[in-house]
Length: 269
Image (cartoon, rainbow, N blue to C red):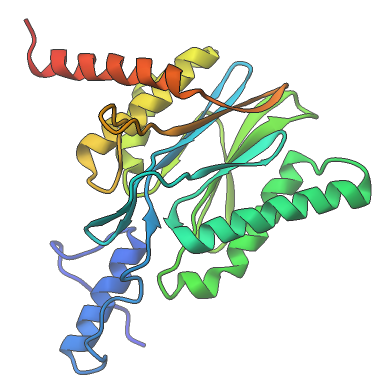
């Protein structure tokens, strides 16, 4: 198979799903394909997820929108799931396989704890998730990629930790924050500008909410806080007490604050 080359305008860069779509178009144009839709057509995809550490733990979050190409497939999908008491997974990519992977991951951690009589280390949990992502590589090559974030409280180190992955199951630990998905670039930019070591839980929750809010301003596949419909990101806080979801009441106040900030930015007095 020849190496696919694209001009500057059409080069998909690091967008794996975009690459598959362009290859499918090229195959149809050259008479090598059936002219059918891209292999990922019609499959709901999760979009933007983020995580950041604070001085007493870690925050993990995801927007609520799932898309099928340029269509909104679901406005209220949940992308953040507690894996066990002290860890959580946020999903991006093909929603169906991602949710199935998370459910299986939850069962495996529970099974390990029952059989061994102890909780698997956070590093061990991260490695187990990496193996599951690697096992999905065949599906990823067909466009059904799953690229999650994993975060949790390390009982041995007494600190929050964040892990990112690639589609082949490569695992990488992030020191401060991470974001991925279609709006990941804009979310990371906001996190990079606003993050400071030693920030409090409330400050990091606000920063992560702002990161998703800013990503939604630039990326149509990312859903920002929606006060009209009452739809807000799913944000989980993990510290020495375990996983706890941030209440919508707190997110409503943050959403109103961010909208006021955006209005002031657009129309300064």
